[in-house]
Length: 317
Image 1: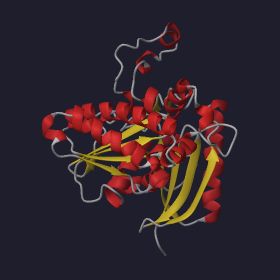
Image 2 (image 1 turned 120 degrees about the vertical axis):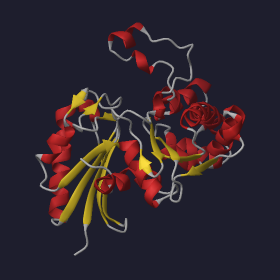
Image 3 (image 1 turned 90 degrees about the vertical axis):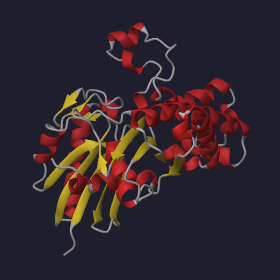
């Protein structure tokens, strides 16, 4: 009987979950809204239903891996300060999940999980050192050094979305009072889903972007850019410039030359990648600018799920 691995990818907007075999084939894959605004207890109840469902469909599961936004303490597996999950200041998710399942379970930052997927099985395969960035509801990052996931002694290495790219933006009084002053001017505020759509709204031309719904979203923006819509292309060019500035800083600190870019907006392709590569070439230090690669992720929006499922093979709980 093949070994089966359950993966749960908790995002700010959706929870993706499924089961993979040892070869990385997805046998089951489903998505439900996270409904994070309804609070911690509601999301935990969602996880309980998912665990029950996967057990029903695949009773012979061997391992469980869970990717979650925010910092995950390496020793306790407590989830700390996820920006897109209200009420999750410090949650012992590892303990909570172990009370639900009998099998081995590992909890890790979602971008770190996706980085492992791309390193081991996807676009980063063959590169012992790489930087992974995912563009979704927020901006996540993962660092692979000498073939190993690097999370730092406290689990907070690789938080690319928190690189400050606008030092001129100061925290508001509301942000300070809410303990969110660290968000002012950071990359995620401009390159995450909300930031990109805010850039679009600032143009005043959102109505020029065709949408299959009443609200223009990232998928509409990417499609319109590839269809030649000038507003969509301008928004993606600005997004790529900000991302390039952040990545140039991260690459300089880490000494890395390979960047794998995933997440929903990465599907935009050339309208995003061309200005991104141009910005890094212009703003990275010369030794990096002379020889670097920016590679589209292989797994797209499944990277988090695949990485979560294989976490127990790479990360000790």
